[in-house]
Length: 330
Image 1 (cartoon, rainbow, N blue to C red):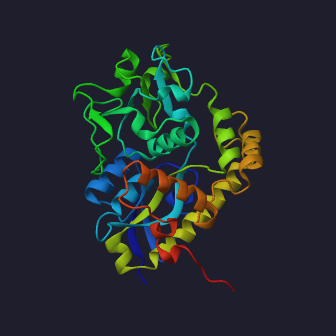
Image 2 (cartoon, rainbow, N blue to C red):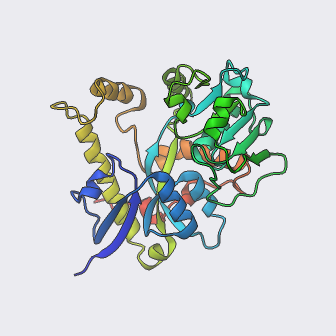
């Protein structure tokens, strides 16, 4: 019998590599795996729905639920998770010596709706007394001029947000002190180059993020895997088939990462750092599924709604294909 052919656009991850290599195959499906940068995948999926299956920004996915019918259905698979305290940078002369000092400042962000920025605005509000509407935002390209919001957003009038000039970038404006701070998933080029005018808001990022996890139990979710609605409606079985395969691929990555015969990645203390992560976050620190991540998802959805990105407060179980939330038991 012929198998269903689907294209899966996703980044280059250890947790999905078995699908790309074909050592894990979803039941009944032949995958064409397109290894693309996340910005390209998100843009092409949100603007043109080019792929049958893709990873997608969690924030963009929640935004897409406004449509009727929604264009995508998500699986509780989190291809990207990342603590984001290290995503805040500031100009050294902006008068920012602590996160609390961001109140009233000019903060750049490539797009207001970026998942990393939703998380950091929420964390700044919850933990440092910096409400999301206590600052002004400037949006645009970080390293290349002309970036736009990939998903249309309707924001509250109380929000102070504007676009930077079309020929400027946030990276250069940060270095020149034209913005006070930058919230971004990607490390800005002046910081990479060692420009003394730019530094992180949290000097000890690891300590700040470990404290955050110890207090909240949250390992922030950045991306989910989505199925295009027309594919899901015609073949609802693909949700369970893909979920099982993605879970198997992640388990294979866990095993490979803990193989001490030779380092899989160019990180000298990879094994002890892995053991430290397990000691703090648990053995299944990159867990998939709903229940183990309900608190994390609930917090994100609250932030998304509070920041004017969701018309209503979504519940975590409303995000995912029902077929991916339960399985047969013998």
